[in-house]
Amino acid sequence: MYAIVETGGKQYRVSEGDTLKVEKIPAEQGGEVIFERVLALDDGNGLQVGHPFLEGCQVKGRVVNQGRSRKIIVFKYKPKKNYRRKKGHRQPYTQVRIEKIEQNG
Image (cartoon, rainbow, N blue to C red; front, side, top):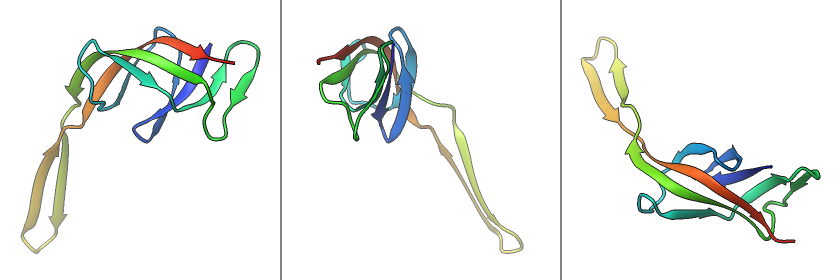
């Protein structure tokens, strides 16, 4: 059984027991997260696809960790003009373990 959920502007294929990194969610470490934007669900009897989302389906998960990714260096440069700008960025993320995929109906 798997589902395709949308969060943070991205889509993820999840199964029970999976661990994934998603865009930062305002939740405590160890807290429960519910993804209600389920795009598709395969329960072994065939694939159900929503238009755009499935009604009565949700995916429950638990927050494992809140963190920040590796540093990305952004360097702007114009040749012969003495223009250089160096900037770093670390994208925040939330690591979620999928516990249950529920469907009603």
